[in-house]
Image (tube, rainbow, N blue to C red; front, side, top):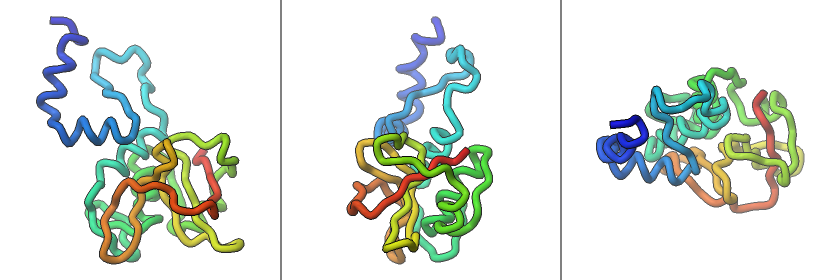
Length: 157
């Protein structure tokens, strides 16, 4: 049996929830020994996948994981696990990123919500106008459509 023929078997063992998470973030399955490129996923893609894996984790102000998060705690945790360091708050994260236009955004970029010049929320862009984020007290980490045009984008480098 070749490595590629094992994909359906691996998917069956991974389960429906894992397959749905992979589909939701537009990801692909990386199978050891099959991928020819050792760096099959970029840091941003890895961070996005890590954030998606935290789906359903409760929001808690000031929490940085691994089981509870606030918005910037989720981005900090996800990028740290993917190998990049970020500051603690959404505003400080905005100041640390390379600012990009909406037309240049990619999955894995950070989305900063602002009121005037003040950043008040951050999430990880998942593509198709959606973000993974920890919304607010009483809510959980989830995928959600961007609900406002008052956003800026930043790329972690």
